[in-house]
Length: 328
Ligand SMILES: [Fe+2]
Ligand SMILES: [Fe+2]
Image 1 (cartoon, rainbow, N blue to C red):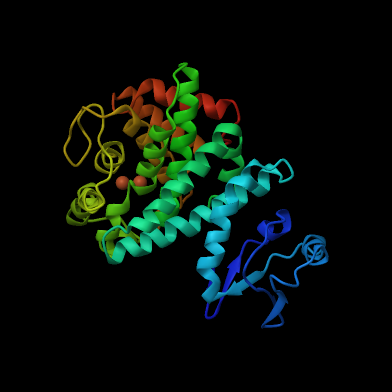
Image 2: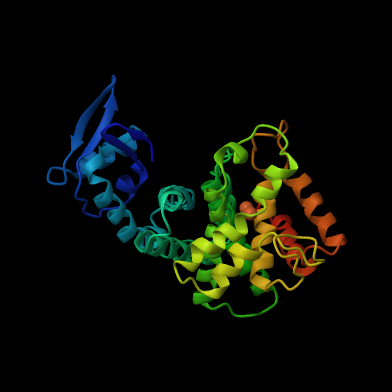
């Protein structure tokens, strides 16, 4: 969501595609001015079809309506994702943009204080929506991937990791004929969304350093799973969630950090593969060339040969790619 003094940009798709009632004024941005387009009372079908006809991208609401707007999305998102009238690409876009809003505000809050119950609940609802959507539309991961911002931000990386992890979890289990429990997927999804939350305790100058880290700086970065664990303990998070935060950099041969354990729960192994794939393919401040998905797979496969990653899970991930669910 773009922040501009008194107005917030919103997703026009949502208003174009649903006939749900909303409780906020809508503004257009024209000639350097915000102009009232419609109020909840006077909004008609004609307003809606004009938005669609003109392909309007820049819709805004008053800043003071932010909460009302978020509630509107939260309430209507499941229906939109289910609707046969809304194209898949539009659903993906709405869901991805909503993820950005939810996870960004969660990260901003958690940087200042300990995790807040209400925004945590929002994340759980988000994971439920992502799970339901990817379960019914396995190929939607591809359309969501095309939206993935290449510009690196911690919270964006966490969303991408969650998308890959949930897809891989669904796919890997279907492949091996096991039945997934919703409550379990929810915890893995939240764990993936939170996996790097501890980085908010690492100094920004280290995280965004446009050069290789000194060994002291690297030691500091390597503490983020422990910082994350401390933050999660205040929330009394379930074990599967906490394990994702604590163990996502551990390797099966014991070469990982922070503890060097070889004993890594299955669901964390999935998050680790998702995390690596996104971390390798994202733009980083210190990286001069973009690494392709194909190169990322080569790096990941090498780690399988070295006994660091779960062979069967990486094989599932590669099969997802070969079936075109994720295009490189
Ligand atoms: Fe990490
Ligand atoms: Fe990560």
